[in-house]
Amino acid sequence: MKQNAYLKCIDPSCGLEYKIESTRIECEKEHLLDVKYKIDPSPSLKELFYQRRNPEGSIFNESGVWRFRELINFCQIDSDSLEDCATHLVSLDGAEGRQSKPYHMSKVADFVGLSQENLWLQPEGYNPSGSFKDNGMAAAVTHAKLANIKKIICASTGNTSASAAMYAANENIECDVYIPAGQIAPGKLSQAYQFGAQIIEIKGNFDDALSASLEKAKEIGGYTVNSVNPFRIEGQKTIVYRALEYLKWNAPDWIVYPGGALGNTSSCGKSLMELYQWGWIKKIPRIAVINSDGANTLDTLYNGKFNETKLRWNKGKPDTELIKNYYSYLDEKNIRPKTKATAIQIARPSNILKALRALEFTNGVVDEVSDQEMLDGMSIVGLNGFDCEMASGSVPTGIKKLISKEIIKNDDIVVGILTGRQKDSSLAVEYHNNPENQFAIPPMI
Ligand SMILES: *Cc1c(COP(=O)(O)O)cnc(C)c1O
Ligand SMILES: [Zn+2]
Image (cartoon, rainbow, N blue to C red; front, side, top):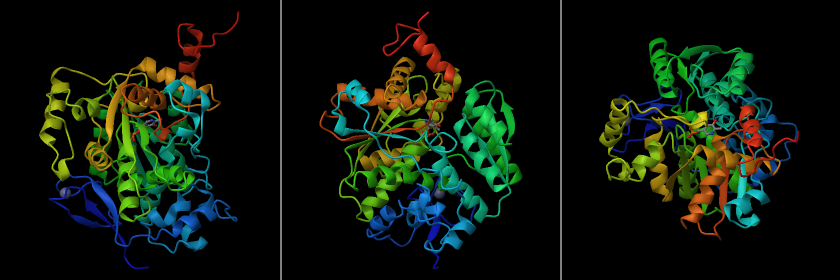
């Protein structure tokens, strides 16, 4: 196959390019990288993707990630050849993305104030390790294999490590996990242990754990699988493909995500930019990112709450000084991110620039919600028979909030991504034992 895929710096005034086998996560000038493809895929592939839902014995058709392999073909394989797929593509027996598609949830629709038909929620918790991270991890570990890597490294608020450790165990490679000591939900930490990862406990928060892991990776030439890894972003594009395929490629008005390190926001933006450029979609959905009010860097900077300047991608010339100043301010005042939704307890979102690009392309919005609101959001999803974790609870509540502000209109079509399933069972038990909570069903004594 002809060389089609390569890496390119996201900064338009820099634009350095690298071979696809490169294990860099940034260019020489420390800008993030994109995976790029020279050839535009034909819209006729839509039919093939649909047919693969009858997998005919191929786990790569079963997989909700690799079913779309022509759109993320950075291995440059013959995508029809089962043998080529099996040699290159990393999959947990086709399970990543297999069960995730958008659903209607009547009680959530009532809660947010949309008609049932207009609200779609996609539970990415129904992935093999229990979060959307498996979409990106399958792709990142595939690239690690391409680059002949024997050890992957990550920092994690929990779900990244669960996913990385699961694929590493399955591929028989090593996995080092940097975690903020004492700040990981037990259900997530236990997965990393159980899948045989080496845990490295860091005093501090996720941002500290990430810097420690990136430093270590630099020192030993390790392969980082956090969402700064551009192949993570490629795999996570399939979250959007599955939603759009289900809507017959009619773009909704909104796609809504929780905002943590902003990998999801970035991948959603990249997938929409590409689909639009290829002519696969005619309309561009708007992205809404929902921060926790205890970890709200994007909301603060995007909405001009720090010094009135609204941080924008600005056609590739974002005000990076503003970001630096804000981080210095956080350090000076000793302000640490604080929320019970540990998956999004992040003050320095490493993908912030890619996220700004995504927001600019989609005319996106950013808002924030409280812990109580996320718990309510999580609980109303539960009452529809789907479980999600607290960070994902920001999605229903965020939609509700944006409707009350008339940013989302009540006849808009909205797709919300429920990023992970419940792994901190104490939160749900506590919630229901307090009769003051809106959706609590306390035990009978
Ligand atoms: C990682 C994670 C997030 C944050 O996603 P980003 O891409 O880092 O913004 C949100 N929810 C859950 C459940 C997660 O595991
Ligand atoms: Zn660059």
